[in-house]
Image 1: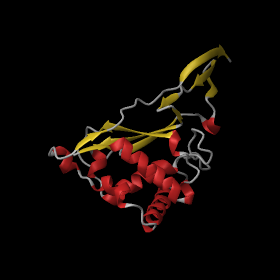
Image 2: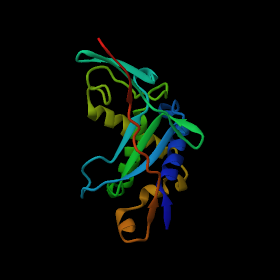
Image 3: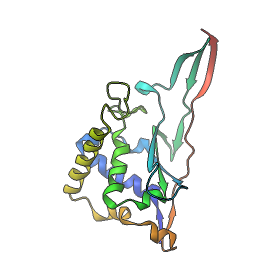
Image 4: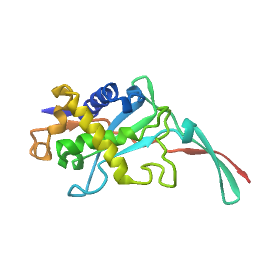
Length: 196
């Protein structure tokens, strides 16, 4: 069996954004899913990550002072399939496959919940220093759990969720062959540097 993990995640993303009001602001065409290899054994470590492709407020450029210099950084444009991508979500395999069905779903919702209300390439920013998850990571996780529960209660089509039931043993044993996009995370580049 051959499974395109990127395509399945894209389908799930689209259905999640169509089903959950809390994710309805997301333009799924602006989200790209990639696959990377996790090397360490076990379930601990990074399961997935979201790379926002714009600075705060959706700005393409950021100017900041660094020592005696004033530097301007610009985010490169990532295009895929004729569309500009604002968010790159990478899932790490086989670590992701070691999770339960519920944990896999929660992991994807967690990453999508980071997307800003404007879906402009910036992340959702909470007040305070720990703006990515807010003052309480447990609170963030409770929101994700509530969204996952609401989604499952909506009776999503089984074929949308089927790939979340796949386990590492099928992949390691050769019964499952995974494919997916491999995309390097675009990095901001310095486009101007002057003395402050």
